[in-house]
Image (tube, rainbow, N blue to C red; front, side):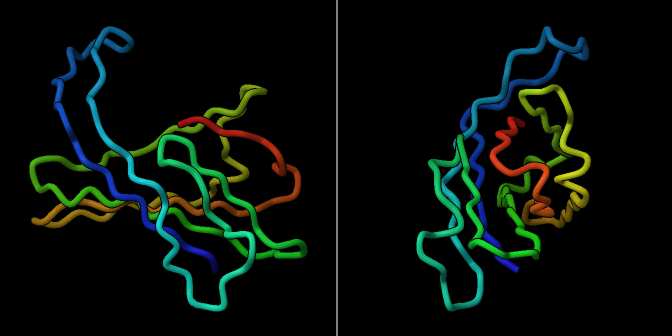
Length: 127
Protein backbone atom coordinates (compact mmCIF):
# COMPACT_ATOMS: atom_id res chain seq x y z
CA UNK A 1 0.00 0.00 0.00
CA UNK A 2 1.23 3.48 -0.82
CA UNK A 3 1.20 5.91 2.14
CA UNK A 4 2.14 9.53 2.72
CA UNK A 5 2.16 11.77 5.78
CA UNK A 6 0.86 15.33 5.69
CA UNK A 7 1.88 17.66 8.54
CA UNK A 8 -0.73 20.17 9.78
CA UNK A 9 0.26 23.31 11.67
CA UNK A 10 -2.35 25.62 13.24
CA UNK A 11 -1.22 29.21 12.64
CA UNK A 12 -4.29 30.97 14.06
CA UNK A 13 -7.06 29.27 16.00
CA UNK A 14 -10.50 30.82 15.61
CA UNK A 15 -13.24 29.52 17.94
CA UNK A 16 -16.44 28.54 16.14
CA UNK A 17 -19.60 30.54 16.78
CA UNK A 18 -21.74 27.41 16.67
CA UNK A 19 -23.65 28.65 13.63
CA UNK A 20 -22.72 26.72 10.47
CA UNK A 21 -21.37 28.95 7.72
CA UNK A 22 -20.90 31.98 9.96
CA UNK A 23 -17.69 31.02 11.75
CA UNK A 24 -14.42 32.40 10.42
CA UNK A 25 -11.89 29.80 9.38
CA UNK A 26 -8.92 28.53 11.31
CA UNK A 27 -5.67 29.47 9.57
CA UNK A 28 -3.48 26.40 9.11
CA UNK A 29 -0.51 25.32 7.03
CA UNK A 30 -0.74 21.96 5.27
CA UNK A 31 2.68 20.64 4.26
CA UNK A 32 3.26 18.75 0.99
CA UNK A 33 2.77 14.98 1.26
CA UNK A 34 5.84 12.97 2.28
CA UNK A 35 5.88 9.45 0.85
CA UNK A 36 6.42 6.88 3.62
CA UNK A 37 5.72 3.81 1.46
CA UNK A 38 8.17 0.94 1.48
CA UNK A 39 10.50 0.89 -1.54
CA UNK A 40 10.71 0.48 -4.47
CA UNK A 41 9.16 3.82 -5.38
CA UNK A 42 7.38 4.18 -8.72
CA UNK A 43 8.24 6.87 -11.21
CA UNK A 44 6.53 9.28 -11.43
CA UNK A 45 5.85 9.56 -7.67
CA UNK A 46 2.43 8.50 -6.34
CA UNK A 47 2.03 11.68 -4.26
CA UNK A 48 2.51 15.23 -5.45
CA UNK A 49 1.20 18.66 -4.59
CA UNK A 50 1.75 21.48 -2.16
CA UNK A 51 -0.51 20.27 0.67
CA UNK A 52 -3.42 22.51 -0.20
CA UNK A 53 -3.80 20.37 -3.29
CA UNK A 54 -2.64 16.75 -3.27
CA UNK A 55 -2.59 14.59 -6.37
CA UNK A 56 -2.48 10.80 -6.16
CA UNK A 57 -1.28 8.93 -9.26
CA UNK A 58 -0.95 5.18 -8.87
CA UNK A 59 0.96 3.02 -11.36
CA UNK A 60 -1.11 1.53 -14.17
CA UNK A 61 -2.74 -1.72 -13.09
CA UNK A 62 -2.46 -0.98 -9.34
CA UNK A 63 -5.48 -2.42 -7.51
CA UNK A 64 -4.61 -1.61 -3.89
CA UNK A 65 -5.47 1.42 -1.82
CA UNK A 66 -3.58 4.54 -0.86
CA UNK A 67 -3.40 6.26 2.53
CA UNK A 68 -2.95 9.90 3.46
CA UNK A 69 -1.98 10.28 7.11
CA UNK A 70 -2.67 13.79 8.40
CA UNK A 71 -0.62 14.57 11.51
CA UNK A 72 -1.39 17.41 13.93
CA UNK A 73 1.41 17.22 16.54
CA UNK A 74 0.04 20.02 18.74
CA UNK A 75 -1.74 18.81 21.91
CA UNK A 76 -3.78 22.04 22.12
CA UNK A 77 -5.84 20.93 19.10
CA UNK A 78 -7.37 17.71 17.81
CA UNK A 79 -8.57 16.48 14.46
CA UNK A 80 -12.31 15.78 14.44
CA UNK A 81 -13.06 14.53 10.94
CA UNK A 82 -13.16 15.30 7.26
CA UNK A 83 -15.79 15.91 4.59
CA UNK A 84 -15.22 15.35 0.87
CA UNK A 85 -16.94 16.97 -2.09
CA UNK A 86 -16.53 16.11 -5.77
CA UNK A 87 -17.39 18.39 -8.69
CA UNK A 88 -20.49 16.28 -9.44
CA UNK A 89 -21.77 16.73 -5.87
CA UNK A 90 -21.04 13.32 -4.34
CA UNK A 91 -19.21 13.14 -1.03
CA UNK A 92 -16.62 10.47 -1.76
CA UNK A 93 -18.26 7.64 0.17
CA UNK A 94 -17.24 5.11 -2.50
CA UNK A 95 -13.67 6.41 -2.87
CA UNK A 96 -12.86 7.21 0.78
CA UNK A 97 -14.44 4.28 2.64
CA UNK A 98 -12.18 4.35 5.67
CA UNK A 99 -11.28 7.37 7.80
CA UNK A 100 -9.75 6.79 11.24
CA UNK A 101 -8.71 9.28 13.90
CA UNK A 102 -6.25 8.60 16.71
CA UNK A 103 -5.56 11.04 19.53
CA UNK A 104 -3.17 11.07 22.47
CA UNK A 105 -1.59 13.62 24.80
CA UNK A 106 0.86 14.71 22.09
CA UNK A 107 -1.50 15.43 19.18
CA UNK A 108 -3.79 13.67 16.76
CA UNK A 109 -3.61 11.81 13.49
CA UNK A 110 -6.24 11.14 10.83
CA UNK A 111 -5.75 8.41 8.23
CA UNK A 112 -7.81 8.65 5.05
CA UNK A 113 -7.81 5.59 2.79
CA UNK A 114 -8.36 6.15 -0.93
CA UNK A 115 -9.72 2.89 -2.35
CA UNK A 116 -8.51 3.74 -5.89
CA UNK A 117 -11.70 2.55 -7.58
CA UNK A 118 -11.65 3.07 -11.34
CA UNK A 119 -15.01 4.89 -11.34
CA UNK A 120 -13.27 7.76 -9.51
CA UNK A 121 -10.29 8.09 -11.87
CA UNK A 122 -9.66 11.71 -12.81
CA UNK A 123 -12.17 13.02 -10.22
CA UNK A 124 -10.91 15.90 -8.09
CA UNK A 125 -12.23 15.99 -4.52
CA UNK A 126 -12.08 19.02 -2.26
CA UNK A 127 -12.24 18.69 1.51
